[in-house]
Structures are given as structure tokens and as C-alpha cells.
Amino acid sequence: MTRIGVLGTGMVGTTLASRFVELGHEVVMGSRTADNEAANAWAAGQGAGAGAGTFADAARHGEVVVNATAGAASLAALAAAGTDNLAGKVLIDVANPIAGYGPPVVLDPAGDDSLAERIQREFPGTRVVKALNTMTAAVMVRPESLPGQHDAFLAGDDPSAKASVQSLLVEMGWPAGCVRDVGGITAARGLEMYLVLWLSLATSLGRYDFNIRVVG
Ligand SMILES: NC(=O)c1ccc[n+]([C@@H]2O[C@H](COP(=O)([O-])OP(=O)(O)OC[C@H]3O[C@@H](n4cnc5c(N)ncnc54)[C@H](OP(=O)(O)O)[C@@H]3O)[C@@H](O)[C@H]2O)c1
Image (cartoon, rainbow, N blue to C red; front, side, top):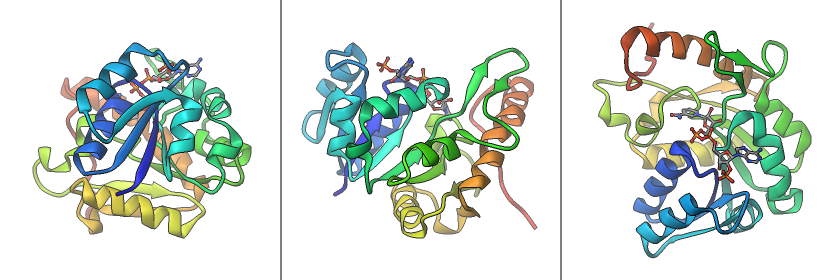
């Protein structure tokens, strides 16, 4: 059992938090206010192993913390979570830095920086791992919902943090060989900029339930 703080009450936060509870972890979902309706409704629907509170409550609770907040607000949400509450923790950064939905979508930062790097710079005592931002929430937690093998990616500077995230992904059903370490935290640039292609694919397919498979 791992204590997990999930920052974010949207589709990604609730989908990941529910799956973590299902797998036997103790989860606190955090939001800007302790009386957030979505977070409290989520916790009430889960029973034991689930709670709700502020971003700070969730970060304090978690040995692992998930950033599932809107990318443009992630630094503010993490500041509210608190540097001390995040110190030494593994932070799984699932967010995409969407500055405008367009179309075409606008990312900020992009190119020579990434949200994950900004978070790592702002919270140097936190072990940031970019992961799972390259697929829709339902696929993150149930990779078997798509046919065949397909891939998830990890980027971060701390090998043991990446190993912890890999273990959580394997628990969720990802074959270990499909969890690909693409390098240090700067590799998050590619994972975040992939959103541009992901959105084009979603438009052309007319659905979100797809993923990438690396071949060759
Ligand atoms: N949707 C997907 O399938 C998908 C897939 C991959 C990655 N992502 C990324 O995952 C993240 C979460 O996506 P989502 O659709 O679940 O939720 P979202 O609507 O993008 O974000 C919701 C969360 O952001 C927080 N938030 C919004 N504005 C804020 C502000 N000004 N200050 C502090 N916090 C603020 C909200 O706080 P409150 O709870 O207090 O309202 C809420 O918890 C995003 O970065 C998204 O790009 C999404």
C-alpha cells in the first residue's frame, strides 16, 4: 500500500484516484478548497482508503503525489500544495501545458522548456517524473482496454523515482516492457509537445481511445 496524494478533481484526477483505491492504495484528492464538491463526492463514493482535502492536505498525505491539475495552473496548485509537503516526494506530472485550445492548440512552455522542467526547477527537492500525459485517462488506468501492446513513457532525473512510477504503472496493467524510460526531465519536452499530434489524431479518428506503439 502506498499513500498517494492526487492534486486535481477533473477527469484525470478522479480516474487515477479511483484506480489507485481499487488497487489498495490510500488516496487523498486535493483541490483549491477543502469543500470542493467533486473531490468530496469522489471520496464519499469510494469508502475506505479515500479522502479529500486541500492541495496541501493531499501533498502532505502522499508518499507519491500526482499533478493532475490544468497545466496553466499547475505551478500555482503546487505552490498551494507547499514546498515542504512535496519535499522528497515522487511527483507524477500528468499535466499538459495548454495555454489555448485553439484549434490549433497552443502550448506554453514548449520547444526549449517544458512544464515538468519548470516544476522541477521550482521544487528542486521533489522528484518529478513526467508520465501518462500522452493518452486519455481511461487508457492510463486500463491499458488492456486497447488491443495489443502499446506504450507509456517516463521522463525524469531521479532513477528511483522513475522505478516507483514504473511499479505503479505495472500495477495498473502496463507490461513492464511497454513503460519506456525516455531520459531525463528535459525529455518531457517531447512528451508534452506530442499533445499537438495527439489532438490531430483525436480529431481525425473522432475518438480518444488510442495510443502509440513503438516498433522496430
Ligand atoms: N483529459 C485527459 O484525458 C488528459 C489526458 C492526459 C493529460 N491530461 C492533463 O491532465 C491534467 C488534468 O486534466 P483534467 O481534464 O482532469 O482536469 P483540468 O480541468 O485540466 O484541471 C482540473 C484541476 O485544475 C485545478 N485548477 C484549475 N485552475 C486552477 C487555478 N487557477 N489554480 C489552482 N488549481 C487550478 C482545479 O482545481 P479545483 O479542483 O480547485 O477546481 C482542478 O483540480 C491537465 O493538465 C490535462 O492537460 C488530460
